[in-house]
Length: 343
Image 1 (cartoon, rainbow, N blue to C red):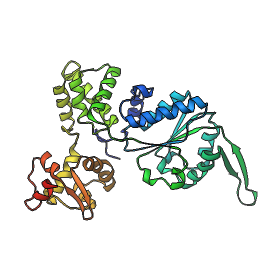
Image 2: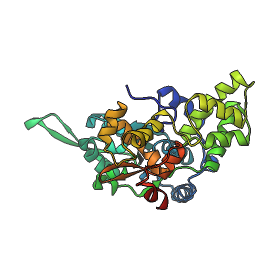
Image 3: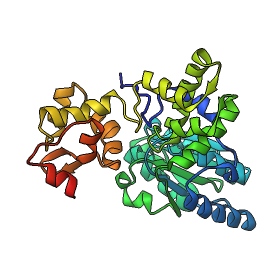
Image 4: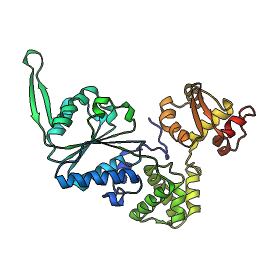
């Protein structure tokens, strides 16, 4: 079973996805953050509506939990179109995709999450659908095989990926619009938390929202998840009112510290510093030390620590930086102190 972490940017459960749907803004005007993306998308949508054409195929890329799916639903709402959602791993046979494509109406949206995980046969099947709005479907096998050319209605494909570099060049080149989503600042997350709190009927003030935002690791999905935990704590311990102190107490109970680290993050840093003298150390050694899968450390722990400057990746392995020692209240090795703090 995958580890479930309160500060993970990945979805924890289907129930959480259902909950998040109720918090999604329906329009770009209500969407908080990602100002450059919103401005460019507004122009593209307005131009497409004026021409009476479907929006160009668009690719959203960036870390998980930043709003790629939300933007897909906003686009469908803005264009007055139906949206069909699927994911790369869910499409295993060309017949699966064929059924979806032939049921799309003029101007409909097809949203494929984790599009970098499409099987190669599905990807190649998509090329003529994206370019010419038609597909060549092969029926039967051997000497009885026939190719049927099936025309499609003009639709918009929206792809979302956390690994844009894993997309093949032929697929990437068939998108007309590219939008990179970046981590959110504390002020944008505070606005998102205040809006979500209103929808949930939670009694939260600006200072309480800011306290949660500082621990949300730049990710709206994490911010909303933390808000739910703090709301529950406040209802039991404080009559439902979320103040900065209540937020601190609730998240301390959950093991989330003032910068958004949990036990796994701290254990990762502590292992590098205490056991491997600050590094460098290979991720396989850390995996064995912490009894965690390598993929868990690489995909779920390191991105945040790298972004915040707590660790560095070197050719020799992972190395703890000055902020890691400061956060854990530890002194760096004497031989490394100049390197760590003078850089």
